[in-house]
Amino acid sequence: MTKKVFIKTLGCQMNEYDTELVRAILTKADFGFVEDEDKADIVLLNTCSVRENAHRKVYGHIHSLKHRRNGNPVMIGILGCMATGLREDLLNNRHLGIDFIAGPDSYKRLPELIEKCCSKEVEATGRSPVQKPFDVTLSEFETYSDVYPSREQGINAWIAIMRGCDNFCTFCVVPYTRGRERSRSPENVLKETRRLVKDRFKQVTLLGQNVNSYKHEGSDFADLIEVVANIEGIKRVRFMSPHPKDFPGKLLDVMADNPKICKHIHLPLQAGNDRILNLMNRTYTQAEFLKLVDKFRAKCPQISLTTDIIVGFPSETDTEFEDTVRVMEKVGFDAAFIFKYSQRKGTIAARKYPDDVPGEKKTERIVRLNQLQKEISRRKNRALIGSVQEVLIESASTTGSPGSYYGRSDGNKTVIVAPGDYAVGDLIQATVTDASPNDLKAEIAQPKE
Ligand code: SF4
Image (cartoon, rainbow, N blue to C red):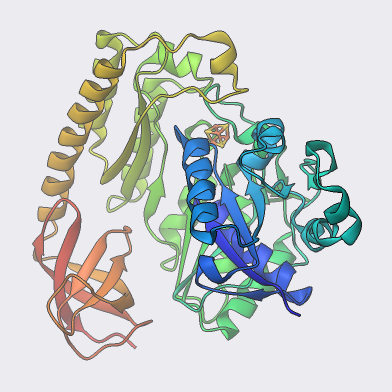
């Protein structure tokens, strides 16, 4: 009988993409899928190690699942970054009762790992920690380029153009949990994009831990994004994320010249102080970051910039934190994702630097930055009132007036568009009528297509 699988995805877009790969791999191997976790034979948790307490959330989820099952069997598999980073803990924790583990480069082996779990021999003998099937090998070559992800129908499709990271920022687990950088061939990415057009997707977002490291036989990221944007039928192309250390002028030229490439860059700052940036191994200074922002704005004045920031990195003083405040004020990001530093097992920072900034201090700093960002976002969004924005309509709005729709501007701002003569998937011109720190309100200016 077909086994029914439920996948819960935690963490970043790369994990969302990997879940789509896993669905494709398991569908090919004749597994079925259910939306209700309580009706699944197999529950897969695609985990993330980046945020604090991630493992506690996963453990809590498993306990609650087992409690709801009330003794009825369910097979549990752990995928993703936590599978690689916490393999020993996961396998040895008898209370959790995890059945198998697969790391980010081992998803093609999932049918085999599940089969091993189902085998009568193992059932009869009971599974000791060492017998539990697992594969967390990190590959230098696996890019899943031969798997077409099984996506939910929608407007945007993610395409991972590369996997892994070689940057070793001292706070980050990714190089340890996802391995070395490797890129897919342009031909392969183009093939997937053309298929997405046939499947009626309107936008693709090219994904990598550091897209500017993309390299394949003489092709760089600027070459790749240009050819993807030129595919007929694709209305918009986005990308996530570049690293400030190596944003090439060539990419900026391609972005400025091609109307299909959105004028939005997510550029993680992480900190505004040079000593802290150095401890983080970010390999740029505050001045270099600000110079890069000036370069963006000189070439592309309407560019929208968003960022990630960590407050309370080990030994960060109040004065050093003020440098981050100053950079935020100077740049005026359109949005910022701000996090408190927390140690990640196995990282360089966890080995070398005591987590010595008190919790209250981190809270104080994050509250301050969030307030500052809210004011900046409000100011920037309100400055757009009266302007005409190109909006890709994604779905009916759940928060706007009846009949209104939700979309995104070229600069990646959420836009609620008043009812009008347009539909999901349309690229429309809309006049901004109101704005808050989080979104824009707009009405159709003129139908485009
Ligand atoms: S660039 Fe730094 S923060 Fe980003 S994935 Fe690589 S190591 Fe982690």
